[in-house]
Length: 249
Image (cartoon, rainbow, N blue to C red):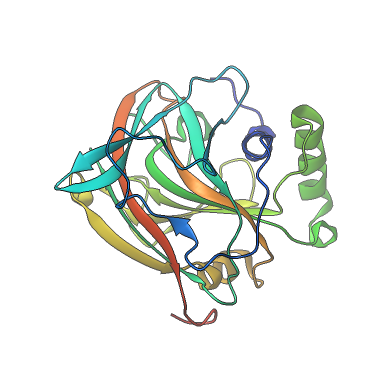
């Protein structure tokens, strides 16, 4: 795939093209799959959105796994994200907890290289913020991407990723822009294993962007292999937002 410096920001904008109206925080924000039937329809307020026009979409399907209903993601040279509007108040529920499992590393993938930036599993969070605080270069890049995609862009994007490009706990800046940051939470030693993960999203945002988070615009999951043209599978369990202290977990 041909890449440009504007591509990651255009990707974020494309994911926001579909209408995602954000209601006030519900009692239990997140993605609850365990009470659904395998083979059933996905929740109606979650949208499978392509990262660019003409891109093949990753297949997301409810399946049974060890007696539980989970979401299976299958990518074959594809890239799309299952997204939800940002109905989360991080001052009340800053902690995100989830389960996932990936078959393993994607051959040839490297999250530090824009031409090979694929991942078997990601949690994706889009944030609003004051763009006047950004550098001239960052604002110019966002304006260019807005011109290409025709949509306002997230102020910042934070991802938790399954990656072998760096050790778990590492932060990988997107190869094209510092407005997209990836925190590695799983790697090669976790292949084929269910993991129960928990992160203080507000704290992580402040650590990588050096300021408190603004409103959460949208969040979701993504399994993608459009750069490497490989095939991969991952499984996602329930995603929940929990109470906690934004400054520390």
